[in-house]
Length: 330
Image (cartoon, rainbow, N blue to C red; front, side):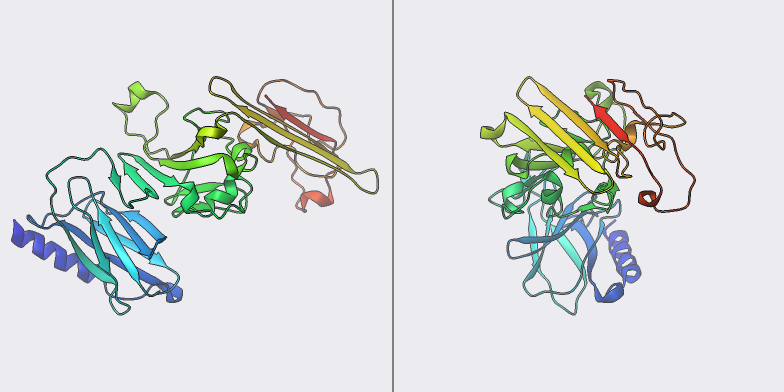
């Protein structure tokens, strides 16, 4: 068996190669194995760090293989590998070596949580990856979105859509509660960054705890943990503006979070050619008339829907929309 494993390791390293990635990026790749049996370890966490800074994060695949990349090589790089039932292993990286074979020694005691840092900057627990917000921020962040941009493995595109570990998330929960369904931008763009204590990336998310035992979900969500002294939070923004040609806009975003009461309210009005549903994209009902429809009358429904009429004009929206646009959600 060990001979087969050795052959497998040689084959994998031959496939991986020993080269830099595209555009001069520094790529670290390799395989994680049991130090006694030489069997590969699936799902081991692998972190690339420099001193106390976390630069990249990932897991080993079914063959025990991992691959991490950063823009360029830096001094004092350390590769940290960990897995349940094994002792943590740290390896100092060399500039002229990008492939590594990491051996993890079995550990007798069974741990509920694996702490990758003594001060718990990152904690792995089953399907949950937990980040201590204070370790990745400098108190200049204004919103949840600002905080997430500093979290390793989290990306935000130009439209505010969020990826975690390369996969788009489905929701943002607050203390485990789903306030906004798929319209998580209401939270990411409006909730005050200063109330956050931890950010959890939850994989294999299933809303129904009973079904979770039987279904293998691939959904990924974020869960925001609040500071103990900020568990009662009233948040939101109010924006008003007026310009020439009788153009004006008004936005009011309000949320209340308490232990037993949580709600979100978002209102937006303008006649400047801006869509009113920017943060409510998943509530849009197609082929309906009313909002953004060239000065036609509109009606209001107090349920989570925004009525839009699509346009096929191939111009920038701000150059042709002459709307009186309104949206509201409770």
